[in-house]
Amino acid sequence: MNQKRRLFRLLAIATSIAIGVVFLSTLTPPVRFLSSGSSPAVAQIRPPRLRDFWQEIYQQLPDLPLENQYVNRQSGEIDETNTLVGRLIRYHLYVKNRPPNFRLDWKLTMADYLDANEIIQESIYPSADVLRENPMEGDKAAIKRLTRTQRTALVDALAQIFTPEAEAQGSPTSPGGSQSPGAGRSPLPRSQPGDAQLLMP
Image (cartoon, rainbow, N blue to C red; front, side, top):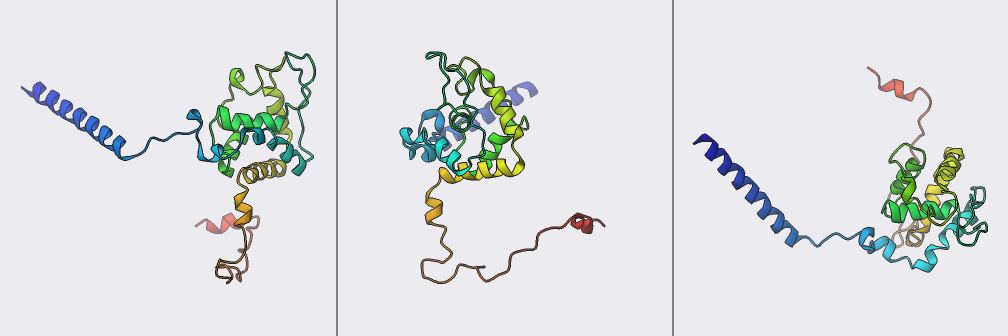
């Protein structure tokens, strides 16, 4: 008798959950991201322009390594257009399906290259099937050789290049012509070495 009661309760709970899931799925539209090819951030980027993003990054940050010394399998020649930043962008967008307009997501990608986040799979790394030698290890080494300042500049440039409308909205005044709140305030002081000890009891 007790087992039948438990079985009935479990069946009732499972049925309630199933009904709830079906009900909730009718209320919310399906979420489609890069896997279905329709991320709002990426959908606005025309594919031909996507190829040019790495060139703009190298114009902004000319000290970045190109890592374009790899030989193309089909042509047998060095593919100079297959660069570190181009592969990094493709890894971020197409392998990891991360949105391109947020700095945090680019930082996660950097952490992947620094072996501090997710493991990069060699078999699906961009250009692994196009080049004679998989560029993954060379790319990871190149990112590791960058200074923290260079990595931050790269993250900032990548996030900015995918969100150009942020520049147009970055005016210091509000639409009414008055200054934005906090414009007259002095910036917060930066922390100094030893400040954390002030928090100790």
